[in-house]
Length: 299
Image 1 (tube, rainbow, N blue to C red):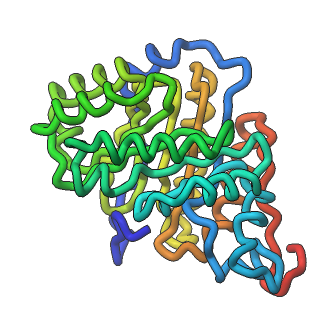
Image 2 (cartoon, rainbow, N blue to C red):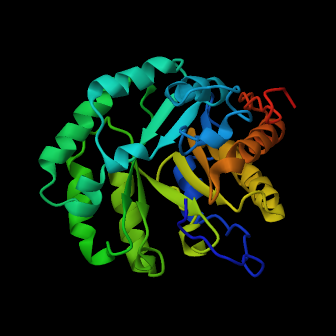
């Protein structure tokens, strides 16, 4: 994931902002009895994970089967570029256990070509296809481009209101004006609350404005971008662990945390670190990936 990539990150302030006052009110102040916590990567088709995450000799067609043994979720970006047949989606779902969740990205035909306008046909096809995941469908997400500005608010509201009420969705907005004007932010968050739409927090070096920390629902959806095991990556994940612990104590019900890197080769190592840290600090029991030493042997 190259979004927010910087050649030099030494001057970047990676400190997480304080929580907006609204978060505590939204979360309710009381821990959920059984919060659902999902941690994963953004793709499974990585040949450079063979020998590290996948056994030596694993063929590309078996990558997902092995991925689902290590993680309980996947951020499914592949759906953005093309809507795969329902038969393919069902095949993917069959690889996973019942507690696994897929988080597909809405197709670019809806978000970037149609820009949410007159996209009924494309949306119906997307929703129908997602049904093939069955109970393994998690929260799907809408990512809108840098040129989708607050003057498109009515279009966004109309589109979110048109989605089925029982379809779980999160929203990523990339134009800076959505978050630098209090009146825009307040209107946006109120509308998202009314439509039960989670707000994606994107944590990447070159776009600190997207680390907005707003939680309009009891679902947190984090897209975290590391810098290839730079020392700051570990401190950043430590800070996220602390914030998630706070949110869980205040009533967070669902968390999706997807780990990216500009060079995805090192993502399994960072995800292992994060899951173990999260388990230790938050009293969770998420299975971390079992990593190999590159030669097919356990570390």
